[in-house]
Length: 553
Image (cartoon, rainbow, N blue to C red; front, side, top):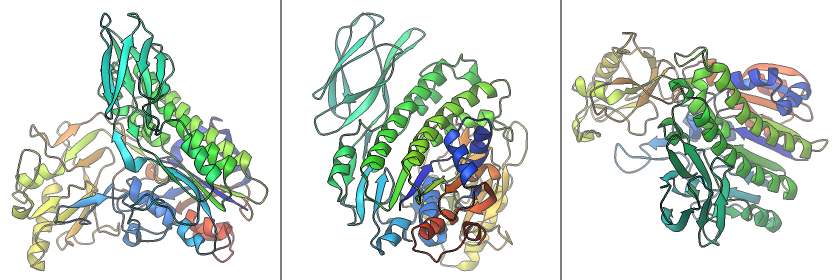
């Protein structure tokens, strides 16, 4: 018996539910018909990816697993220090696979965090694993080609690529130490090996008005491990890794104007085609695990839905100020296209599962539309509570309260030697932040404040030394100082998730099918700690109890 756990990053319940009811996600429809489905409340107070994945995988809240953001404040040296939430020593609570290993149960993984140790080793219970996100060498880049120029050299992560445009309209010829490639302008992206050691990237040739661009998706150095040598060899033979599409280039207008700016959809097509490189890479890793594993638990992580959500979803979010009814249907078609790629991989998992196996679909969090960025420290500087060091940074030792550079939503009192003065400084900070307003509408943008457990502050005049700032969902915090004095500004990213505001759009999808799981049951809303307990039950590690009882406990 095997439990298959598929995780779609940022797969919001409201998005999956709508797409499935439209008939766009047949694999999810199979799970709805034969199992349970629910919306899952994410980690709180912060619901960025690391704390939300840690909550999903450990079945505990951040106060237990201690992952409180993309970077974790106070986890390094110095007051303002912060380290990656994906660091090998996190999470503090054991993930499900470590718990079941104590019963001699094995696990296999496709790009799941916290599986490899600091020395890139895996535990003896690992059947096979691949992971690349922790070893990125360079992000995406683009190169403008001169139509009448000769061969040029392009440096990609220290590797020399010879680029030659064979004619003004292409194709482009690329040569590296590991491969030679011809790419047509506007054609499919192609994998390019950079050396014989497995490094590579995906390359596309993009024509925009007046320009011909060569674009790559970034370079990572994957690592593999496990006791199943055949599986490990299959994972090592996977295509070059692509961990994300070229969203920032799309957002910056490199491929022309976006739909919301009067574009014709060609920029979106380029962005989506780059995300589909990611789908191919993660699909290949999933197929290798499905075909070769000998594990009791298989965990597959898919990031594409998060990528598309950040760039596009706000324009389809009817509850957001980012909503654009004039282009929403067109944008929704791109969202649908991305989710269908993830659904196809889920379908392959369902086809591989045998009678007696369990398949669980989950997500770390959802997504809300967003319209503005808020430079929180600007207001603290204006109030005399924080002191600048440079145009971008603060002098922590001369500041009383700072919005932490970890950018996880938290405000920190810098000197806690006198509790009364600490409370007074934080109370002043909360009062001045309450006045933050949208410069266009005058509307106040601060919804409230939470303690480190995610609970609303009962008394803002007597606050603890660490407080989480809750902005209205359209407004997202930034630890950077503004360079022009504009504290609340519009920004081009249409979807976000930082502090959990309680809004149902931030709820993740959960679905499960397998022995003891009632068919056709809608569990409504559950905590995202529930899937870990369900999986432990299915593997015989937890006391047997109906799935509904687990969901509502």
